Amino acid sequence: MTPDLFKSKYRVESSRLQEWDYSQNGYYFVTICIKNREYLFGQIKNDEMILSKIGRVAEQCWYEIPNHFTFVELDEFAIMPNHIHGIIVITKNTETQHIASLQRQGPNKFGPQSENLASIMRGFKSSIKKWATVNGIDFEWQPRFYDRIIRNEEELWNVRNYIQHNHLKWNEDEENPSYI
Image (tube, rainbow, N blue to C red):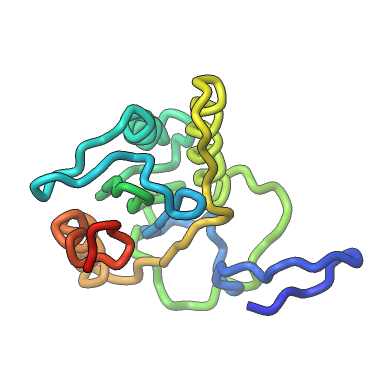
């Protein structure tokens, strides 16, 4: 991405799909990383993720998301040593199918950002950062987050499978400090 000027300052373009309204119903696969990919959420031993204290807080905050955003359901979720994977389901209108369609939705709307994927991720990330600050833990998130709109049942199954088995592939992951 090439930075653009906005009000005489450089800014990086959004990685969000420009034609998509991220407040609409759908399944969204998100990945959120710790700044500099530090290993603060715990470690994988014998193919099992052992959470650190902040890792347990992150897990608790994840499961509390629907308490703060009543239009959200949670699907598959996993914490890795330096990042989190999860599926967020936005369900504002239960009559609408949850799997996103490929139809054009119009331009992405900027305005009140209180009931969309970005606001959910902002709330989640800030709750963990606040806990870390109060408890004297040096913790920062990588700016932004990665997302993918899940468009059909096969893709949903593949993403769920990836999340469920991600920790089993840690020995082969280039981000693993023990990777050779």
